[in-house]
Length: 266
Image (cartoon, rainbow, N blue to C red; front, side, top):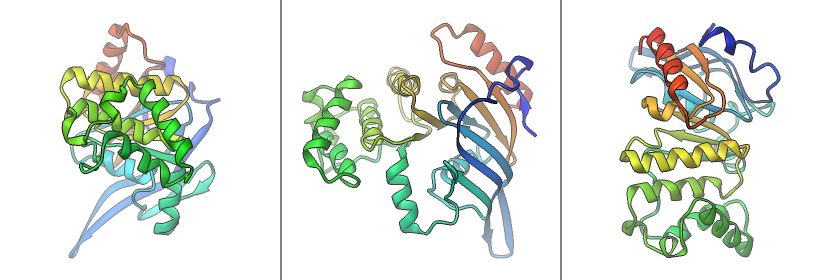
């Protein structure tokens, strides 16, 4: 049973809408005669309006958990339900359709196609779901405008933009198919502090606009953006801390999170 962050946070999730639910989720890898159990009987709910952050030491299983929740990998045992639909038993084609229709992804590396322009990278992702070129074109331009990417920038080749700009483009690409949830795995890990803040500001604003975010990070400053922190240790959810909606005055927020992480053995 996860340890709560503090008494005032208990039961704050009672009336939230569950988007993802896991039941006794396990993930193991076998090498020769050895079996390594990465995730162990995880029971977890992800709520539709939360910014959920998953933290833990290297090798704790936090990224593997994100891959399970997003349908990028399958569990060894247990169940994963997305809006009530079990996804853990879908075949590869069904999982690809599920991800395309429901999920947006932002990784530490932007994984943009270097032979295309910024604009083309976003449009080609949109066309995987919607073949209406005019509508995708219109939607892409609006999203670029929403995140402060100018026409001059989105006409550039990928090789001619900065790392911070590339991550902002990756967020636009993640949003082009109107996902129900965005999964972000160390999205600021390769960025300087200024570019990292811009990316976190975008994710925070998306959450305030009603988008569900699940982010893996080892960075406490990035984790402060979360409304809910899950700490994974030795393959289990060891603790939970509810921070609530992000506000610019982070003094109380950071002391709460630091105290929680200290109790978790961070």
